[in-house]
Length: 287
Image 1 (cartoon, rainbow, N blue to C red):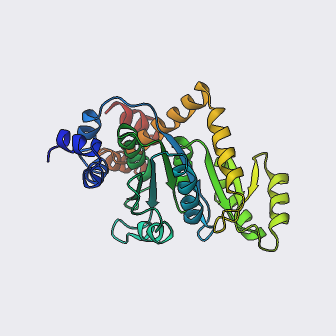
Image 2 (image 1 turned 135 degrees about the vertical axis):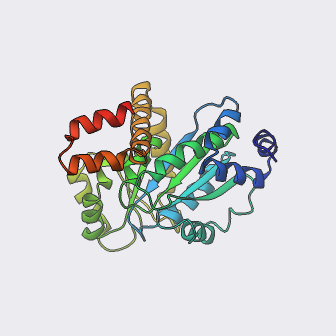
Image 3 (image 1 turned 90 degrees about the vertical axis):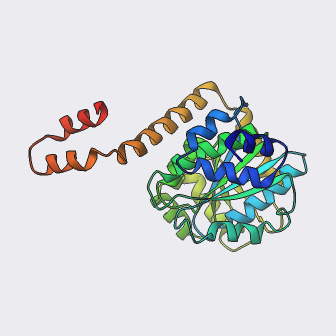
């Protein structure tokens, strides 16, 4: 099928057509797909991130269940930063979301960043646009919680939820990775473990961000998390949406500049003293 036919089929509920459109927007036909989509209201996007093993996928699965109980159509985009071939993120999410994989109101999709810094910025806004046009009410965006991806998630999602576990190690590593800076909500998962109260106190002292507790595997604390997410969404403003749009534009522009065919030659000119970096940057913009 061509792109308009895929859009029509996806709109009628074909999972294969939806998957094909998401594959196309990860590649060279992105603009063709985006041009074929009809107008759509902006989608709600909730970002979930945190260190490996914190319970992100279990939390996402619990959130999917909570929002499905409200009758919302939910999509999960699991970002795999390691390899487009491993399927690791998708495999892990399918195991943890076994209850949702046969639900026609739930889409679970893995997006590979192809190992490139900024790959998330290239793939995710387009995927979100596709899902919004196909009338998904809520998009849960999950990443592994390391590196530049989280900065880009904060530009797309509102709120960004950072999942941590009891113990000083996770909180310290999260701070080093810059996760605390992008968090709109901090969640201490596995809060039935020793040290949870101390971790909550430390986070409340170190940050001004709301801190919640959760035992995702048991659903304990889930209603409070859902209410905090919804309250953050209700408090959204044009100024905040504009700031997120600005960050998305800058991230995408940086990705395009990094792949510019003239960059290598300009870098060589600067390295050999034929050009200063200011003039090189100006040439890169005007090329």
